[in-house]
Length: 343
Image (cartoon, rainbow, N blue to C red; front, side, top):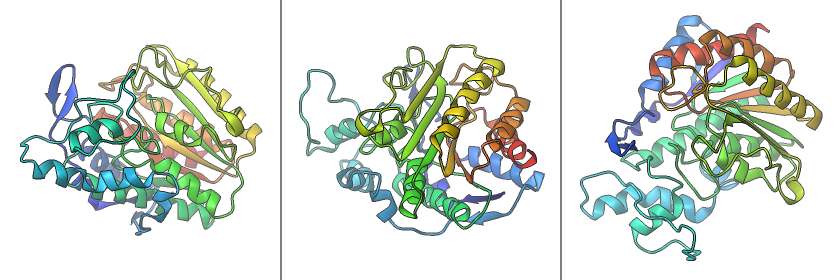
């Protein structure tokens, strides 16, 4: 299995994250990629390749044009005001605030497009996000050309990014962009399986009214976990997409046996859907020692469920999402890939 990544991920290196009422060193950091890359090479799993450039056309197939313009210019506009800190939203169009368009001022637009305050926009954010999308598209091209599987080592991650919304460390939805590319190249049905601890709210929002992408997510119950306001079992899609969304929320302290039962349900649903390709939003923050999650998976469990994923016998694209226990992220991520390859 080949790995695609971009050196440009390092351009995304924010100094600040709002957590527990404090500005802390961000959990989503460049060391995540370096640790995974080192483990992949040490295990000799496949070839490491640089990304190809695809431009913004595939991104525009998923994301709103005005939102992309905002992301492209946000840091420059913020810096031009002379602020010393990074761009962090401080106000949102919350309930009973009815403005349906982004304000002119950059502070207002930050809140309009942000889902939360933990994700600062910093120098290089736009460039790194575009590179991350190119990573996903480059790996998607491998499976489109006949590879059984490929690994897109994306950073920043993407599954919290909706059509016109960023947050949860995500700016462009890499998995959604790759899924749309599959469809644009002739696939009729694609499945996205999100195994990140946090619900893929952005991916659900992008596809919930469509029947050509099946979205399944196993995640911390939104009553207890970020992003809180989406991801209940009652959400099954809308309109033409009714029945094409499957949410499997789980409670605090969920261990592998219960988690694997949810995975089995998701895999059965994907098989019944008749997907022609599988995209796995691969977050390994389900690990027992992850600092911002509450599931209890052990490192060996990742290898076991990698083998389960192979049982679908579909061209499979792994797209990196979360995982913030940096010392173990390489082991846990590569365990999934090795479990898949060895099945």
